[in-house]
Length: 294
Image 1: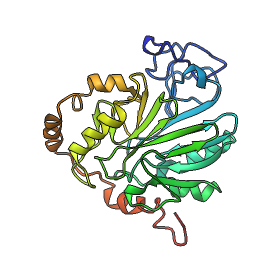
Image 2: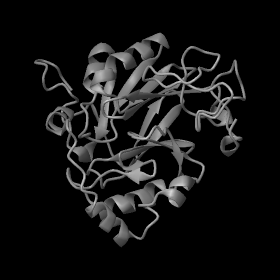
Image 3: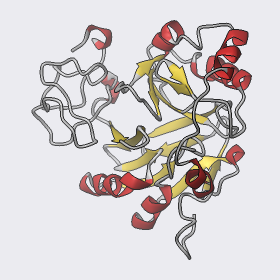
């Protein structure tokens, strides 16, 4: 196990100790859910890409899944005892994969949640709801998007014995939220905070100053060893920590005026799926299917 996470244990009961997904540094290697493999761990067949605290080892089932086109991470969290689960930031192109995994594991998916209205892909929330009866869509009220459940700062989303605290983290969009596990051991930051970066602020209600204060007041106030899981990564990294980003994020360790100057000069092209994604994501990706409900 890597030294940085010596206090954490891998998910596999059958192979305790040698594998730390955080840095893919173990003797057994690791596997990601885009179909590619690094030397696969010996057991079980499902490789999970999150490290867990010791107290959660036997009760929280987390999976990190990947969509290649938009480099989006989707997260599946489940209570092993009750089988209740939530999926965060699903993508339409991989919705069938997510549904298949839920069924294979015998889970009851309560919620398909989004961290915000994405501009670079169409959400898979609607497709998942069509296939899994009882699953409800979740998004922040500030996003203005349709959903079964609208959330806001301070709300909690419960699945089994676990719950996610909702922290409003606007700036990339008005409706961005970060989902924080109740013990603050991990958080799902959407596009607000990326690994060594952050979401762009040049469209979709973006505000560099707002984003800076959101991250510093709502994410950087979490424990230093809290694991942070973003909605995207373009360099192959899977997870970071609060301490790492406070120290190594070259945008966010600057004063706010310098941060704003950096963000104003990124000169990024618009996401190539934006014209399709934005209107679709306002209705859970189902605007093309007559008769479907969000």
